[in-house]
Image 1 (cartoon, one colour):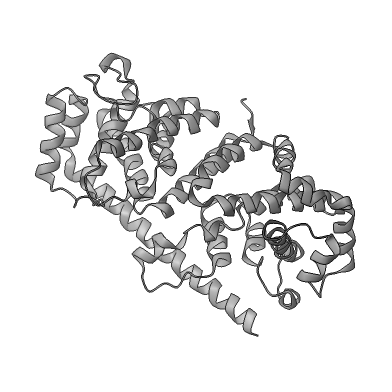
Image 2: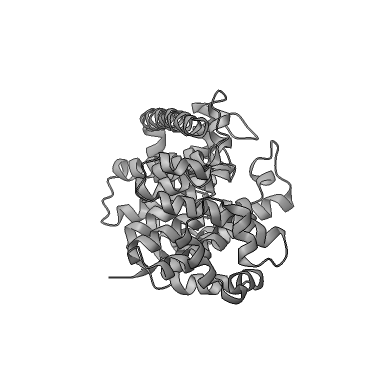
Length: 419
């Protein structure tokens, strides 16, 4: 069985997620490094708990990464200003972490005097995150301070154990020196490289990043889900049975993952792209393939990176022709085009049935896309649209449930802070 290393996954995700908010993700890594040193010295938690906590540390400010923009657009009545609650809701709904672990994120900015009022398994770690945030901010925004100065800044409630451990792990100001020099990064990833994860966990991490892309650019997740749904139903309608269907559908879901590295002003431009902008946009397929293959998902990456190839060789990124393009990519290409034509975009309204089918049939006649797949779309257009609409409604219900959950958690959080 193929093994996947957490360090490789987070290293690659750090590369792409820093495009959303580089400083927040660097901050997360610095906090994770200090936390790791603290927990190793403390010796209180299991190896599994420590590696989970280090991962949460890397992601603990994910709620501040423009997370609320997607929901604000859909639900303008929602107040999503609390990034701790936003991050908790994200971790709760879109990751594999337990509620206990996600609560570390929820409570990492709680006033120190309130920690005694909460019943949370890892509230000590949440308080530690709070302290580490302050320590990191002092490190980055000020010059050299000794540890005692830092501790006096952040806490009157600091327990003796915490203080003593910090003084041990920061002997001769070693933490500061490693953070400022960047040496901490390699040390952190040396640790993460020792942690193996399953393929299922790897796919869940990848889905989490696709979710982040959705919060960056409205409609991205909806498009990813729609393309996956269309792809699945085209296989059924074509009568094609594949043992690797999960791989094919995962490629459909992740086919635009590389757009995380596309400038937002290009993704959301309300007009036709210039030649130069289009060339930048085209890079997303190369990036998608690179990311997925870099994660060890070679077949997923191979399928996903070909979804803009054309049968006559005029597509990109490789200019492949009919016989060089696998059937999986041909079906994905039609699913992607159909989804795009049916959707409202920043530069267009959604197209009518007649216009959508005219465009698809014209592309098939010009030998751009597979005629047989297009024939199936034409014969089953209403059926495919109905399925996609049902999925959209289901997702909208889920988003509304998430907003309700956010409001519920946020109200309790605010009451706790005021009480």
